[in-house]
Image (cartoon, rainbow, N blue to C red):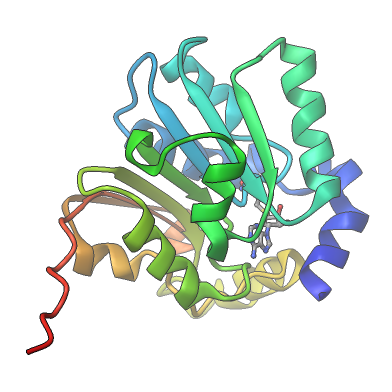
Length: 218
Ligand SMILES: C[S@@+](CC[C@H](N)C(=O)[O-])C[C@H]1O[C@@H](n2cnc3c(N)ncnc32)[C@H](O)[C@@H]1O
């Protein structure tokens, strides 16, 4: 798979080359803030990569909370594991699984879906395969009331800037036309949204609605 291959090569230098400080950290920080986390909360970081969001999550959940980091790239997870070891966090569980198998990943992490307080996806939903299945899994696996925050990429409304945003998305393997925050508008309440870098970064957070009742067969 091209995605895994790309991240295997880039994992050792990802933190240095991903324009985190100048461009992308602001979206990550805002997404974490909008999760309304509290000490002891359990948060899933979907497509966690090298764990760049972990320090911001830890600041809210503390040692009594839990981070479940899910990613398909063992090389990226190895960097995340190293980050957790270096910081002395023993509340991070890392699972090599596709986002579209969220239920199995949570079982692997020994976390009950009903115990998840929040889900974070930072610059990940525009990259992953099986994107519609992933949304189905999120809806089916996580209980109503789960807080979700997505930070992801778009070309924004300004034609003069779009070639730059298109290039950066291509380098990261992300589809700038996917708009993965849109399903939040349909299945959630308490929606908050903030754009950065002239609309290139879109941060959206909301609370999952109850699932519609299963249709009865006569
Ligand atoms: C652009 S990186 C973002 C990583 C991290 N969230 C961050 O903000 O730095 C996208 C991540 O998604 C992971 N990924 C790609 N396809 C995936 C899938 N189907 N399920 C879970 N993770 C996936 C990649 O391995 C990579 O670590």
